[in-house]
Every structure is written in C-alpha cells, then in structure tokens.
Length: 510
Image (cartoon, rainbow, N blue to C red; front, side):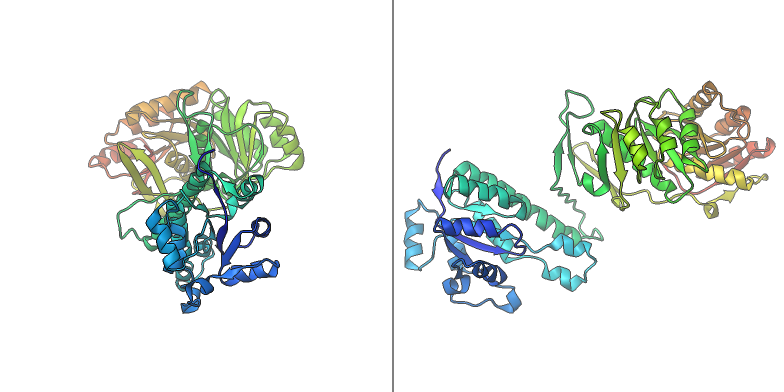
C-alpha cells in the first residue's frame, strides 16, 4: 500500500441516511472532525456526535431554499488543496480554510424522480448542484482526499476505515475516485437524456451502472459483458449463469412473446434468435406439444417461452427435452420443483415491464440507433388485393404468421396453419430461397400445407414466390406490398384462387 493518508476531517452531506450511522460513529471514535449541512447535520447531532455546521466555516447560511449550501471557497478550498504544495498550505492558513480529507455525498434521486412521473418542476429541483460539485472536486484530488459518492459504497468505506484506523492508501482513494466519476457521469447522462427526449441534439449518451462479466462472448475466445438491470426484467429461479448467446436468445424470445401477451395460451421455442416452433391453443400443454412438433430437432438445446404460467402437465412434457432456458410469467410450485430437476436448466420468471423504446447496436466505428418496431399487423390494417378474400380463420392465421415473421431474421418466409408455425425460412439471401427452405422443412416434419398461409417480411418483386407457395398448397398470403410489380403477384393469385392481403408495413429484421 502506498502514500497512505489518515482521515482527520470529513464533510458529510447526503440525501439518504441509510447506512450512515455506523460510519459517523466510527469517524467520531477515531477523533475525526465532522462538517455537515441541513438534514445530515441534524441526523449526526441526533446520534449524539459532535458536528460543525458548514455555515460556521463559510459564515453564510443555507440560502435560496437550500439550493446553495456548500458552494463556497472555504469548502472547496478545503477539498481541492494539495497537501504537499507549499502555496496551497500557506493559503489555507491565510484564509482560515479547514482541510477536508473525506467527502461523503449522496446525490438527489434524479432518476427515481423522473421514473415516478413527477412534475417537471419537481424533477428540475432534483438536479443536484452542490453534491455533484463536491464529488468532482474530491475525486479530482484523490491524491489527498477520498470521495464516497454512493450509499452502495458505505459498507466498503466503513470496512476500510475500521480495519486501518482511518488510514487510506492512494490505491483505494483512486479506486473510490473512479466510482465517483462513474456516479457523476451517469448522473449527468440521465439529466441530459431527460432534456433531450425529443432528440433535439443528435447525440447518444448511454450509461449503465449494472454490469456483469460473462463466461465469454459468442465464442470462448471472445470476452463478453452484459450491461443492464437483468433483475428488473426477470427473477432467476434456477440454473447456471446465462451466457452471451443465452441472453441474445432470451431477448429474441421475450420480444416475440410480447406479440401474444394476454392471448390464449401460446408457447414458443427459439434457436439462434429465431422461432423454430410456436403454437397457440386452448391449453398450454397442447400449445407446447404443437410448438415442439414444428421442429423437434432444432428444439434440442433451445430457449422456451410461454405467455401463461407453466403448470405441472406442461412441465412434465418440457422435462423430457434438453433445453437451455425456460421463461414464463410464473411456474406452479409442482412444475417448478420438477423443472429444477435438471441442474443447469435456467428458469426465468418474467416481470411485467416495458421494453426499451429504442434498439441500439454497434456498427462500423460507431453505433446505430432506431425506434423499436412497435407496429403489429392487425385485421383493420389488411387490404384485400385479390378477388378471393381470406376467410376469418385465414385472417387469424395470417396475423399469427405475420407476428412470427416480424421477429424472424430477413429474408424470411413463415408458413402457418391453425395457429401453429409449420416452418420458416430464415436469414436467406433471396425470398425464393427462404420459401423453398420453409416448404422443405415443413414437409420433412410431415406438415400438410394444403390450406396453410404464408407471411413475408417484405414485398415480392416477382410472382415466383406466390406460384411456388400455391403449388405447395398455400391458400392465403400476407405481405406488405409496395413493389412496382405487385400486380404480377396479384394476377397470379387471382388466376389460381389464392387470397392475398397487403399491410403496407415492412418488417425487415437484419
């Protein structure tokens, strides 16, 4: 340990007092002079600990309704002075400025105030000025000062001063400075993003305080990290740690199943971010079995998700399959007990929260940001463009297929029948290839495509796809339309009694 400094004085000014009492008592026990303001000063006094009001140092009271308390040269001079600098030491004596060795600050809860739906005026009042300035000053001068900038660090700081009788190494002071600049930069990013909600400034500021080191990235030779509040979205009930690839599949599964929120029991099985099985039925067990029938080969090692609490009957079927992750709004106690029988199987209970409004991904030497695809095709969006109109049952299947198509890698074709995914062609370089892949796959698992429907994520530039689909037994098609040769596909459908609807909305997923 190098360049140790012993704490002789401390400035404490916090919003939340949780966890502060043992620190105050330990500092008092070590004979540290404590300076404080307002509510914190009263809190310390009530503990029976001697405290010097900051206004006794500055000769100014707290003014402007508490907006200005610590913003004064005698406070910041005490923090920013260089203890090995002769001129600084001389000026401290000349101007009667007390040296401050530790600053403990907890900022006004700006993000919590925004999240609470408070008024703009209340939110603005929660922009901390003095606190953030104290943090920056103390962190900048880590050579002489230790900055404790968050309630989350109280326990560690208490352990440090207790173990070493108030003596703090430069390594620890610098480490706490790093924490402090994380707090200040995150706080300012949150404020900026509140002011820039309408993107008046074309600027991207992302700050995630919760990070996790993953075993590796997509492959073992790649490092991997997850930054975000996983626990806000899920309660992990069982299983091994989630990997980078698990998290990508879980993300795809959650976004897909949001299309079926509050619907009849629906079950999906995903592999490599795409649905390989999906079905909607009157009961969850049958929905699972019919989803599994979509591709029982790909289902091995997949991610499973339900829009309905998983009961024992469904769990008994799931338990027969090797799968990485099972996600549901809840699990019946006996279902949970059974599924926990596989040590590594990850079980996630999903909470009812909104997903982010934007998608962010790295690109070249920068970042791409776009609005979330919030359009889900509905019956009222459908434009009948053929002489033959789809039946009500076909409309339901078309919309069902469209929801899956929206969440499948482009180019994609989805084939569905009776609210069951028969097959999809995923991530192909041509739409014809996607269709032929889907037909081949459906037939390999013994699906009867006569009467099935087809969904496409983008328009057909030629009538070849509707011709291939018709020859396979497809009876109705949903696509966005917009090709200069749309009429060729319409004409083919009219000549061959195929119903086709257009939505006007493309659903590329690259």
